[in-house]
Amino acid sequence: MSSDVDTNQRRGNRTKAVIPVRVKGKDSNGKAFDDLVHTLDVTPEGARLGSVRHELNLGDEITVFYRQRKIQFRVMWTKKMKGTSEFQVGLKAVTRDSEAWGLNSPEFKREPAFSSAATQASAAV
Image 1 (tube, one colour):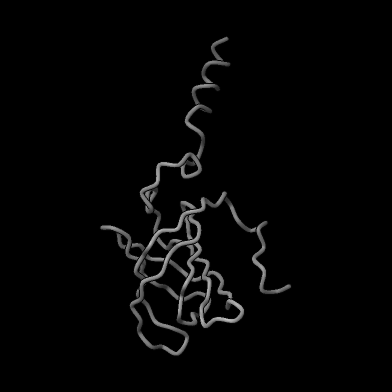
Image 2: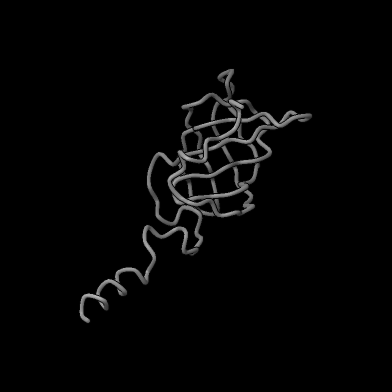
């Protein structure tokens, strides 16, 4: 199944989050678009979008607008949804913003807050 995403390549856990966003870029035909879509899940480094109505090329860069944020992403994979004209798109951030999505979920932190405290506590014993 070549259209499936290899989950072994993923570095972190995804957080399910349906967030309305605006995306701007150029589709596979080079035509500019500006659409309202939504995330299906997010990570600190990326996102999976749903309801994308334009075919995108791997490696293309698009801009995602969320609240007051403007985030550049690179298209890592696309998947045409059966029976529709829509795509799901996997994105990876071009620039790193630790709180790009404004979520304070523990999955969005590089290491759990308790790990360094636990390490210090065990070293002191």
